[in-house]
Image 1: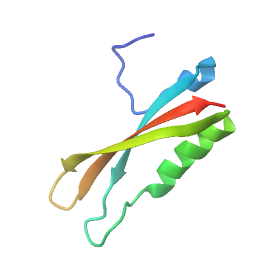
Image 2 (image 1 turned 60 degrees about the vertical axis):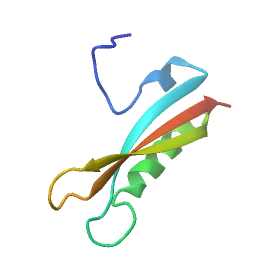
Image 3 (image 1 turned 90 degrees about the vertical axis):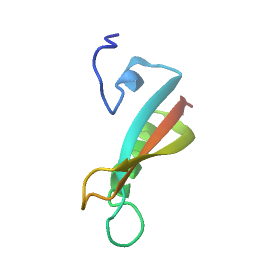
Image 4 (image 1 turned 30 degrees about the vertical axis):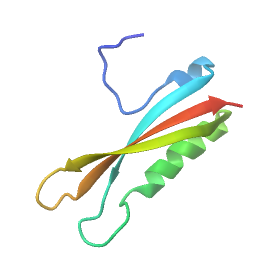
Length: 83
């Protein structure tokens, strides 16, 4: 495994592992509430379910603002378990 590469996703689920850890960055809307890209999070969960994994744990941390009109960023770390 090349630890020098940085990525926001893992390809480990293709290697028949027991657990897979993925990160998704959720971008908060500048005006109003809620995330602007919840479908991306949903797609990640559904993709892993199709590969035979279930969501085991999800944690979030605030990544701060990325510019004047960018809104906040939330890092969601998801742990999937093979079923």
